[in-house]
Image (cartoon, rainbow, N blue to C red; front, side):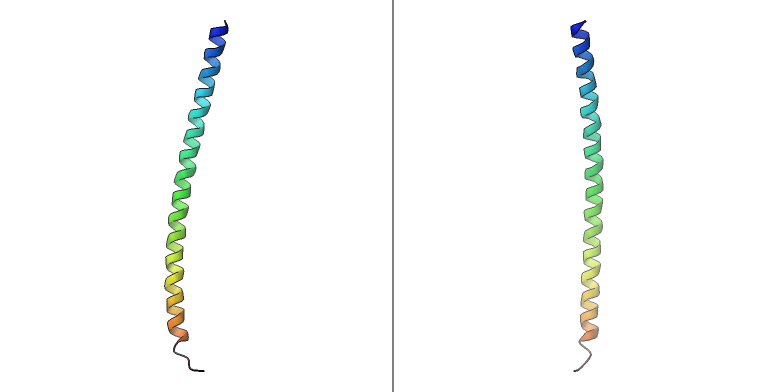
Length: 61
């Protein structure tokens, strides 16, 4: 009976590890998507800053 119990516990732990690995993979995918969005937003902000700088440069004080 002890071997069966240990085998069941080991199986449970293996399923738990598998579930955690899937969660890590999902979070990694979400993090990569967030990083891509952040990069795109940064590029857009840079473009807008350059455009704003060009507009402000037209004014004379």
